[in-house]
Amino acid sequence: MKSDEWLMQRVQRGDDGALTQLFERYRGPLFGFLAQRVGDAAADDLFQETWIRVARARASFDPKKRFSTWLFQIANNLCRDRGRRTAVQRKHRDNVLLEHRNNPVPAHTAPTEDRLDVHRRLAQLPDKLREVIVLRYYHQFVEREIAEILEIAPGTVKSRLHTALKALRGQEGICHVE
Amino acid sequence: MSNDPRCDAVRAQLEEAFWSRLPLAAGDTNHFETCAACRTYGEELGGLGAQLASPEFAVSESVSARALGRARAALAVDGQAPPLPIGYGREFARLLIAALLPLPIVLAWNAALFNVVGDVLAGFVPELLLRIAAGGYVITAVGWAALLFGSIPFLAHRRATQSALR
Image 1: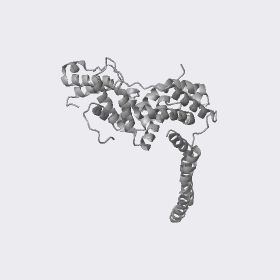
Image 2: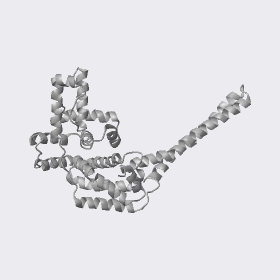
Image 3: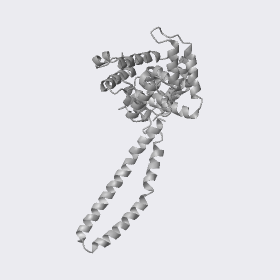
Image 4: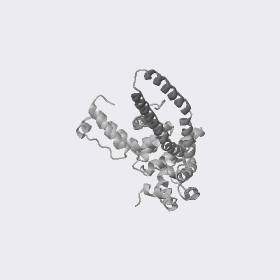
């Protein structure tokens, strides 16, 4: 199987077959990331916008770096832009929570209310903490990659993860995030 | 964190396993088995992991098809990759102007410096030595200018790449 970076180099030369392959590989994870950040409905638009930017900004991709990091960096920047534009982002996330209230919970997981509590806590976290959780926990990026995606220092990622974990455990009221 | 460094080490391992979604395990099993606080912490993280089970988000086929179609259309606009990132020209011009603006002042300052220092030193420094010093100064100045102006294309590329991602 060809690497993402090899395919992206083909995209840089205008190969839309390579773009389709990358799209197929990343459509699930990317949509999941966007939906977790901004909610299902808004994720549709950002999902499309991300891929358009991948095509338009293909010349700026550095093949020495990981494609996934670059892709999520674009997506995260779009989420941030959207967050700045609209004040109703939190409302969307609450809607997502309400949607998931009705979803069946697999037998091996904790009771629904506990699960909702954690998801509610996650939804209520400041954007800076939620983005590190989504990238680290749900998408399994390592700290160095998260730092690259978010354009912050690895030490800041570490400290945000620490704060985020405390907040998820309900141990800390989040007033200020570095 | 606790006061016991073994607790800190074990909890750091537990947290790493939690974030990596691996079965929670501590390297120092002896300590883990005997420390009730660490065991409780491990159980708490395990419970948290179960509660955080990933909600299923699926992109619809219609959105998927539209996104791919629009991305392919964007790719087809110019077929080949542009040799330089979007906005490169603008960044290049901006940096070039920023570098050229102070140039007259720098040149005037250097000319004045040459005259003043040359006059002062002419009284007691041999002319040959003065010429060598002046030549060295000019070479250094030209080197700095080359470094400054030579870095502009690279800086412009970097700045254009970063803004293209936004």
